[in-house]
Length: 371
Image 1 (cartoon, rainbow, N blue to C red):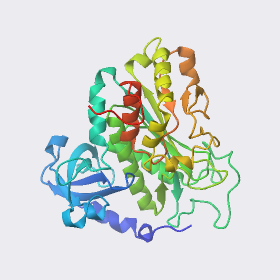
Image 2 (cartoon, rainbow, N blue to C red; image 1 turned 180 degrees about the vertical axis):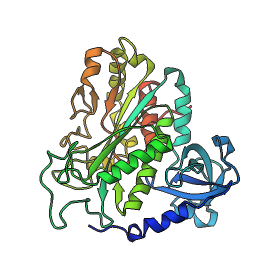
Image 3 (cartoon, one colour; image 1 turned 90 degrees about the vertical axis):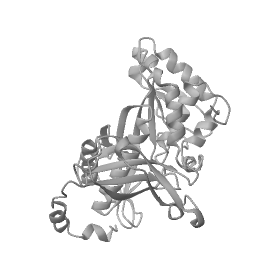
Image 4 (spheres, rainbow, N blue to C red; image 1 turned 135 degrees about the horizontal axis):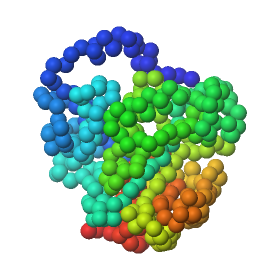
């Protein structure tokens, strides 16, 4: 398995520079989603003070022609700070800054789904929508080969790897532990992690987050994962089906509830939402991966704990359904439901917005409504 050349550079030598005092200056790393809708970019600027809120941070710009977001003849794009976190790589007082991207005319870039999502979330904030997203990913070498897999073959069949313990079952736990701690330091609402069904596949969970915070926290958790993997010389892949054949794909199961669903008798509201989702299946499939459903078609086959992409289904404790109602929720008649359709490379802003539009704004049809 190939690892990156930069991973072989001495971290001990680097550390002697990272321990140098930085005076009263602060490094702010601006992060944004590029033109693919799934890749992340970043760059750093120096501030003369430690920002205490988003309002303290200046807007910035970048060359959109190098990120598939503009033409070279009109390439300047604007970075508008949207959410701020502590920087686990440079440590306090330095910051990570997640940004909205605006075009030259100050309108959202095509892959900036955050602005519309925020508007939709504000329309239903009185219902206190909570989300929790289960981000699956696969650790690969720089050659695209799964971490720890034999170079000319396959590991043993699936079975012992899910939540596995031991060098022959858990591949790459150092990456997972480093990422978990870095997220906690940054202030990301990470709430758990586990090894997944396919060897070298892992999952972390973020939430519960209210409204727009779900997308903000998941994107920053992804950024931190990419940076941690960079240090280890490996790659984090969010491909929904990285290895064809009899191996599990990777999703981003999304748990959703409102205040009404969490209160006594909330199962009725859950069932009403599921009924609405059933009538709008194709709209959600299009919203649940960056290629309008083409990526998910490789994963949602009806096998390997997935539903069929062409059919909507729901059931209690059924991991082969589009929507799963946890058994505890079925017994207590309140709580939340899990939408198992979103792909690992989905945009959480698009996913959470779609759920609000259908379940709470009662939209119908294959296109989102204009407000």
